[in-house]
Image 1 (cartoon, rainbow, N blue to C red):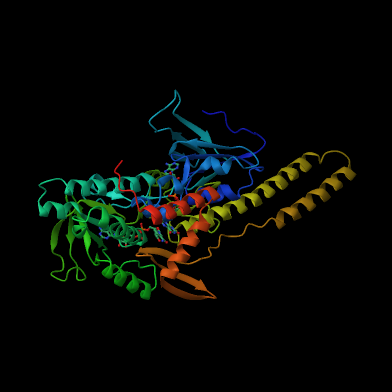
Image 2: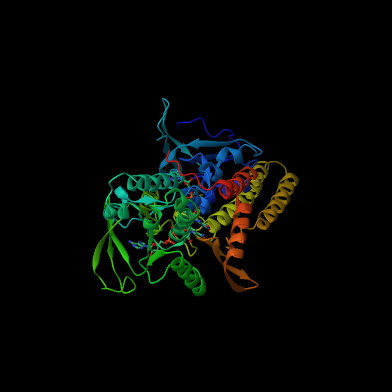
Length: 478
Ligand code: FAD
Ligand code: NAD
């Protein structure tokens, strides 16, 4: 139905939903000689999320960390079809997906349904708001490239408004207060980057306003970065104290308005009263409170109520098969598994699936030959015996095509905390090696530079770093 697909009827068709860490890593490793491959994603590019907070403060240009998906697929052996569209629904029984072009410009056809032989479901997650009032309307997120661009624009707007003649001191303080909600790695890295922006650029561009700029990081749990080792948590908290970033742990954000956040203070808050709620004026709120399943994932799970019972996301088995569905796999942040929702996990899962599809292609080819041989099994006794012999051989070959379960290999956790310092928990020879400081920061830079997917991105990121060293960050508000 719909489009003219698949394009080689002798091959099976894999439909990949998404162009993030999981999907991109799969596409990198997938042998397209074996399959028709169709990628459907509302973004026609891959976003290198670890460097997103650097875009929010103008250290990196947005395009330095984007890579068009076609940049990767055009080098594949056979054509990969890339469709810029948002999947609206998956029918795991009929094995079809329906997608639509929701972009500004649409042609005469902007919605269709296509069948798949295999589905790779890699749509990621969205930011969790817990239904807290005002978050969707007034807070900024830190997930997509436009979120980072918006934050930079919004904060510069606040600074320029604070510089407006006749502004009261109270209003200046409000406009120049940036509140980051969520002390996970996203919130911590963003706070560190904003601090660098303040110290390295804003202080000299806006000397009269800079002393009023405040960064507050709010975390509901008793400490920030629960996934890091204790000493690195302490190191981060003390670095933030020195950097004058206010860290409010044990404090829950209960609401956001255009000009304030409502905080519920805990024991660990300002110590003045557990449970007390206060409104804190601010100009910018960045919401980095973790992940939740996208609507399309919730709808898909609702179609498989017996197998999909985890509200956190899509349940999968050890081979990353989507529980309850035939020929469908799910990887990355959209899944609920024992792994953390990280790029590291998603990319290893994508690479694993590429290998698994190679094995499946081998298996399919042998099965097709068995079927063909069986079709030849008519005629004289000697012919039947020869066919039996051939079938036996093929069945042995089939037994040798083993599908191994996915195994995650943790390479460590790494985060930038500002002031040219980073923290790292690295598993070395079975033990955890924790390090923090300037040397770790250099390691962080080189690790990310080498993880970037292309030479083009590496060159752009390195030249952005050099640009900032030479000329500082640009404070123009586009
Ligand atoms: P994503 O990379 O989010 O990709 C999902 C894809 O699906 C996107 O292309 C999206 O456009 C597409 N999509 C969405 N809806 C649909 C739909 N309906 N139909 C089709 N396609 C759809 N992890 C680390 O390991 N290290 C880090 O340093 C790190 N830093 C991070 C920094 C930030 C600011 C953030 C936000 C995350 C960071 N992460 C990091 C986490 C990491 O980015 C995620 O775990 C990773 O992106 C998950 O990969 P994914 O492929 O599941 O999802
Ligand atoms: P997260 O889930 O790691 O952290 C969100 C934090 O927000 C939690 O600690 C939670 O307690 C807090 N929170 C939630 N609601 C709150 C509220 N109302 N008030 C105050 N605090 C609240 O989310 P993240 O930081 O966006 O990270 C998402 C995933 O991406 C994680 O798996 C993380 O490891 C990964 N990531 C990794 C890196 C890195 O390795 N450098 C960087 C960014 C993200």
